[in-house]
Image: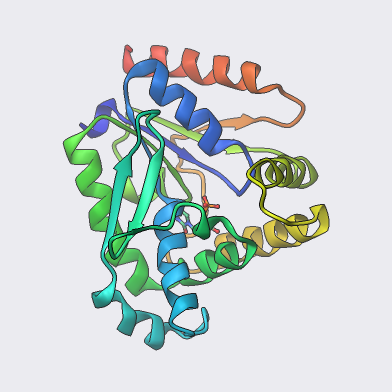
Length: 225
Ligand code: DC
C-alpha cells in the first residue's frame, strides 16, 4: 500500500540503492530499484544499435521489450530482459548514459510507469529513483530526497563499480555523473526534483551507518514501522 511505502529520490551516487536495500531488509519492505528499468531499456537500444537520443527509434523498440524483476535469496533485484538476466550488463558506463537519455522520453516513462505502480499496489515497497515522490508514489508515507556533493558521489560510485570488477576510471565516473545530473534535472518529462513534502538528507561526510540511522528513525516516525 502506497501510504506504507517509502520513496527515495536523488542524483546518481547519493547512496540511494545501498540505503534502500538495508532499509528494506530491516523493515520487511520490497526494494525496487527503478533506475534498473531505464537501464534495461537503454541496454535494449544499445543492442539494437538505436542511438539513445532518437525517440522514434527507441519508441518502436518498446513493444519488443519484456522486462521482469526477480529477487534472489538475498533480496537483490535481478533484471530479466526477454528471458535473459542482464543485471550486470546494465551497469556499464555506456548503459548509464543510455539510461539517462532514454529516461527523458515520455514514451519510455509512461511505458515503465505502470510496472512501478503495480509493484507498489501489490507490496509495501521502498522505491528509489528520480521521480518516485513526485510521480510514481505521490502518496508515499515517507519521501526522502537523498543528496551529496558531486565529488563524493563520484568516489562512491567508482568504488561500487570497481568492487563489482567493472573497469572504469574515477574521471569517467565523474563525467558520467555530471552528464546525468544535468540531463536528469533539465529534461521536461518528470525531471529530478524533490517533492514538496520530501525530507532532504545530505549524506556528504556521513558514514553509511549514520545515514542508515537517519532513515530508520524517519521510517519509524512516519510509517509507524
Ligand atoms: O538510479 P540509476 O543511476 O540506476 O538510474 C539510471 C538513469 O535512469 C538515471 O540517469 C535517470 C533515470 N531514472 C529516471 O529517470 N527515473 C527514475 N525513477 C529512475 C532512474
